[in-house]
Image 1 (tube, rainbow, N blue to C red):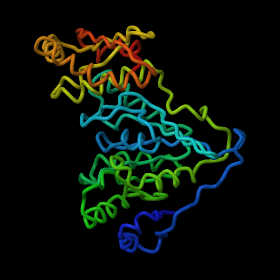
Image 2: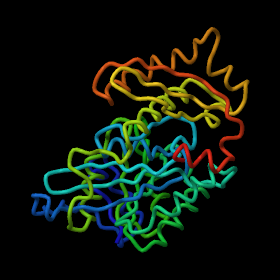
Image 3: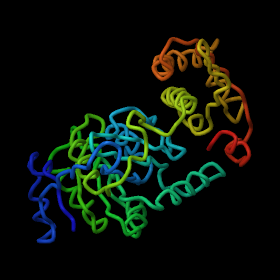
Length: 326
């Protein structure tokens, strides 16, 4: 049965529940304590779904409490399935950050869409993310039809509510409530962490009891090499535009105590020229921005060496995608 969290009442949006009729109950489920000790805890997997650019990765980072997925304004920044793990004394929430639902355009986006569809098997719940800043339209409804057909609880997060007027958010909540028979609807801002604790608590409440799926200290399934590659790609995304962000990827060639060597791959010589920049200015800036996060991941200072190479049509080459782990 659909319900609204306590947060909706706190900020004065309780009338939204009245608009939706008597089926809506305004209450908030409490987290059920497990037995701890690594034996029985509230533990399970929640898939994070939504169309591109609604803030799924930012929300996963906020719920996890650590940066496990890169973010940018470029649609389809997330290319692979990423597990973000949040653990408490008697619970463990595993969030599956996924690429956005999309129509495949090449081998890369086809594999991304296959990853999305295949990732909903055996999940305990789905977190459906929509943007408060955009009209809730056909793309959101397409995703909603899929996730509501799975037969598991669906929690809707209306993201990006920061700096929006209450009346606009209330109107968007009403529209989001028409997407399906949701378990709960949370207005949140992943960017400023507003409403995140309430959302996390509601998701944990839905999890079954069982053993933890990851060690308590682990926050993601990505290797250090994969996380470094993603950090470098994120900085390149922030500094490029048009086709270049979609055509680049990063391959770690060497990682040791003193040096990290990585190759930034693009598809054309013109893209390479843009990434290198005048006298190497662009690739140096990418390295400068990436180095602090890379050093935080490896735990000590390193020399970060970046090289740009052309690999034509790599996005359309299944063997190249396999080797790159995409």
